[in-house]
Amino acid sequence: MNRLVSAFFITSTLFLTQSCSEPVKSGDTSVQTEHTNGHTTVHGDDHKASDNSTDYHQGSHNHGTTENSVTTQAKLTAPAEIKPNETAALVIDIQDSDGKAIANFEIFQEKIMHLIVVSDDLQFYDHIHPDYKENGRFEVEATFPQPGNYTLFSDYKPSGQNEQVSVLQAKVPGNSPAVPEVDLNHSKTFDDTKVELTLSQPTLKASEEVTVMFNLKDKASNQTVNDLQPYLGELGHLVIVKNSSSLTRADYIHAHALKDTSDGQVHFVTSFPESGKYKAWGQFNRNGKIVTADFWLDVQ
Image (cartoon, rainbow, N blue to C red):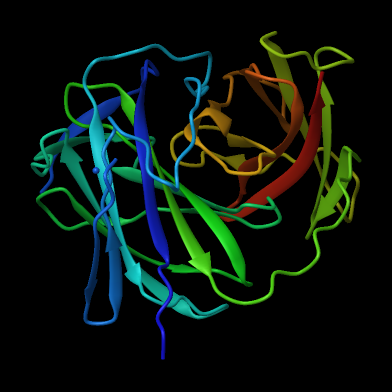
């Protein structure tokens, strides 16, 4: 039986996001593929473009990004064939530009690595945290619900450096389901929480700063919730991904909640690098239960 390649490396970038962090001791684009014990490993680097990567601008992270000469590279090892709705063991190795394992990382937002997994049609979203296994290696189990292409945004912070994002890709073989139409409704119910999304300006425009505001109410009482607790050290987290034919780090935005808002109100300030359709996922902690609220945004 032919095995399908299930993981591709693209690249990583650096961001000037400043966050409270503490040090933790941890631990190509010519493409080289290895098949070992039923797994596929694909290497890449930041200096050449493989067939699986595209040209990009700098991505957005909170309030913008900047160039930095220090780079890292990531390597994803995954099963050669990932099956829908079956747990897949993933290994992510973080290296410097010379291929040497990164030795030290810092904790930020209570974790060493945040891994955002989205299907390329933006219908699926997961925010998971790989376990640190020393010498630059992280391991995690992930589940991919249906056939199709998936992009993994790996967010981490080597000691003494800025936050970095490596973009990895995985494929689940099979026939992908039809993609539903984009729904721009900004009022939805997620389990027992009603969420309304409002914006500080009526029309979103590329490169203009905007405040994204979530208003959370209890479904049963229709009253503003008063049981929000910190999630990963903050009142909420917001991930936004641009609807693109091939996702890159330029399509990824990760914003953090503003402090001192009213009960049931969680606000984020961000901007969008380009016009287009974006999918936003806000995550909040209601008394120990994580609420994930997703909405489409149209940027002019």
